[in-house]
Image (tube, rainbow, N blue to C red):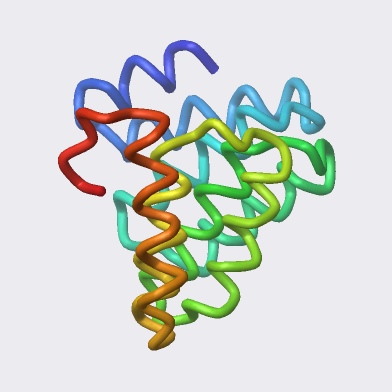
Length: 135
């Protein structure tokens, strides 16, 4: 698992994926390994497999905020802003102090034509992190 994370840090997503698969062969109930495998698959452009990994992580740990966030980002990238919004809400239910999730929720709301709600999300993000240039 840690070797996979290091490979991912080095931009070697294909090798990271191999490491995560090996870790999951040893412990298929490792939600973090499933989440990180999803991230590696995202970098390789394999979105269907990516989503399946986040779902597996969430089956193991439904309160895993990072997996909800990553699933939301994947949904948003696929043009499924309504489903992304649901994922971001789940992540914020677990950790309401995550500025990045608030920002991405705002982006999803904007895509859905809900600009007033998006502005409120950006305000939340800036309250948490006033130096967040993305918000």
